[in-house]
Image 1 (tube, rainbow, N blue to C red):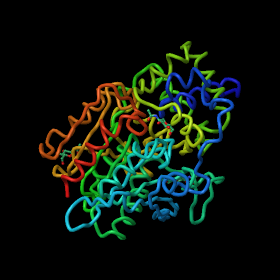
Image 2 (cartoon, protein in one colour; image 1 turned 90 degrees about the vertical axis):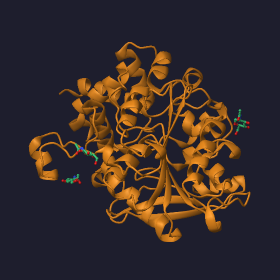
Image 3 (cartoon, protein in one colour; image 1 turned 120 degrees about the horizontal axis):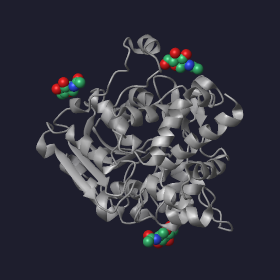
Image 4 (cartoon, rainbow, N blue to C red; image 1 turned 45 degrees about the vertical axis):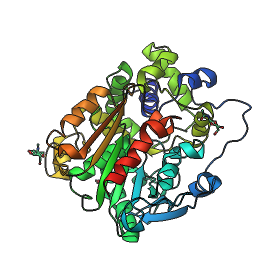
Length: 418
Ligand SMILES: *[C@@H]1O[C@H](CO)[C@@H](O)[C@H](O)[C@H]1NC(C)=O
Ligand SMILES: *[C@@H]1O[C@H](CO)[C@@H](O)[C@H](O)[C@H]1NC(C)=O
Ligand SMILES: *[C@@H]1O[C@H](CO)[C@@H](O)[C@H](O)[C@H]1NC(C)=O
């Protein structure tokens, strides 16, 4: 295939996927053009000195940096906010219960700390008496380390969310469990929910998990069938071999702005409409927060992971990474079709809290309803489902109203599972 033919369609796939996985407000796109920050703005807080120093200590909270090593050698950075400013204690015997907060794709833990202190989920949970931990999955800026490999090597990026399930989550859980001796409340957003569901379905961490809160829950992506989502997934799959030549999927690689323009041209869609069509229209983002978001995110993931997600869109079910042929799948899994994750196998007594948005086009309402349907045999009094009509994907991590609308409900749910 000639480069001039291949590159634009690859570009479109990349750009579309970037667009798909995080939410820019319409205003942002309009005012700045794609990913540019507003010209002439004062320098923004970045996490140069680490997430604790830049984004937790500044609000007057204690914070510890931790490193954990996965069984396959990745060194992951975590933050711990051991207590709040109020001295509140959740649960019995004055013991603070640990919560692990797990971000979604193309961002890292700092995405939870971009608003003023009283609006940020980790600080709110700390103030309500929890021992708060934040994960940063492999490939994100503080977790680009490995015992033997480095990010310039192809082998460093040889993973998908299957490995987040088999290695990253267990390493983080073991570390927290080892230090606190307690079961953990899990809180995921977007891809953070998907890896939680997959893990609990394999019963890997169920002895260590106390309950799980799932915001913008994602497990099935088949209704993300906007023209755009569809094109992105197809392009990714069609170009899988070519784009695996770029093992690191780095949305900040400068070319993204051009990619987005290319999509708009090729798809014949007005960029203005494009964004609202893809991400959903977030109701409640603060312009300063979006600016801070753009100064700190997005983060890299592996191209293989993006292909796996595209397979999830195409296949309408949750399976391990498909190597593309029966022979190769047999070699890796001993079967022609990759093994499925069975959501219904999540233990029926695990307390669950779901919150999903009416305007979220990534965690599409139809897909979430299909997901909820997989829990029809779950203990009814362990299921808590919240629907927020005017929320889209990013409102759950950055919305200025999220404390009142979602986070206080999450804290109340966790406290009830003591
Ligand atoms: C938006 O963020 C800025 C900067 O953190 C803050 O001063 C302002 O109060 C926020 N606005 C709202 C509505 O929360
Ligand atoms: C990636 O990992 C698979 C096994 O999961 C292995 O077969 C393959 O050789 C690896 N590729 C690279 C480039 O490390
Ligand atoms: C999924 O798990 C449920 C509950 O354990 C079980 O009844 C069902 O047969 C499983 N489905 C598959 C396809 O294995």
